[in-house]
Structure formats: C-alpha cells, structure tokens
Length: 253
Image (tube, rainbow, N blue to C red):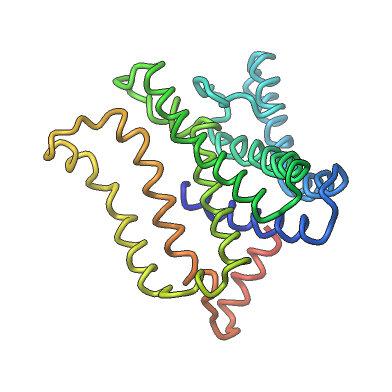
C-alpha cells in the first residue's frame, strides 16, 4: 500500500503543479481540483458505504465518521468497513495539499518554493505522528501497527509527500530526475527488500524494534518507490495488445 501512496502522490503532484502553473491560486482552482478528485472516488465509496450500512447496521457515530473520513485520523480504526482505511488518507491529502499551497502562495507567491514548503511540512507530519502514537499507545497490542500507525491518516502523509516531491523533481529538474535511473531502479528494489529483515537486523545490533522502527519502517518503503520512479515513469513499450489493454483499464478505472 505504501507503493500506492507514493504513486498517488506522484500523480496528484503533477496535476497540482499543472493546475497552479496555469490558473490563479484561488478557491476556484482548488474547487476544480477537488471536484475532479471527488467525482472519481466519492460516488463509489458512498455507494459501498450505503450497502454495508444496510447489511450490518453499524452505530450512527460510525457512519458519521466514515461519511467525513474521520474514522482513522489518529485513533483506533473501526472494524466496520476496514478496507476503507486508505481512501481516508487519500481524501485528507486531497484537502491538505492544495489548501497548503494556496496559503503558502498568499505569503510568498512563488509556486516552486511554496510546493517545497508544503512537501516538507507533510513529510514531517508522518514521522512525528508515528512517534506520538508510539508514546500514547501500547506497542505490544496485537494490531498496534495497523490500528495506530499503518492505518491512521496523519501517520502516512509523508508517503504521499514523497510522491509529490518526485513530481516536483520530474517537472522542474528533468535532467536530475532521469540521471542514472537504472542504477536508482536497482537500488530501490534492494531497499524495498530491506524491511523484510528489519526486525531481525535490529535484534542483532541490539536496538529494540520499537520507536525507531515506528519512524523508519514507513520511511524506507516510500524511499524505495521514489528511487524506482524515474525509470518506471519514463519506461515505454511498443503498442502491442497487452499494453493497450492495460492502458485502457488504467484510464477508465
């Protein structure tokens, strides 16, 4: 799922850069961005939520939380409709990124600097909130990682910010973005495998897999995807039947 967040941040970052480069930084531009995002995600989400509400009859407070994507901002994720944990992270990202850009642009008026500022703030929120969650809750709980770290909104925004930073580099510094892209692809693949043995490594070196793991584990995976993106985003295949089919499904989904 972390890979998806980085890819989503990369896509949304490209859209935001294009929108704010060609339109004024005001509420109309933000509303246009939101409408395009919401029409792609909210109809299907609310349809499934309605069907599940009819079948399982959850408490009203739970339905209210899901209706406004507040079910996993910081707290324990409900067992009802657990598959929706990632969409709330995406929706809050859709809200925060353009608002942050508009606020920053109102002070300094430079899109590149404003974008870096917002990326930096979003990148700090995730690690800081993972530390807070670790200190507020018992990490020995069986589902601690999902309920309070992996599945909460503010703990995962840095993964999306990494994708936006990738979009920033690809747009403003294309030569840097594509330099040594094959080497970075291999390095990214190697780093992607690192978390598989991370617990054992920390035991060997004598570091308890606790707060350090809470911060670093969800920082390493986005880094791996970030390194692979220059190659993957510029990779092209000949237009055979398989490529056309995959492209068609990707466009309409």
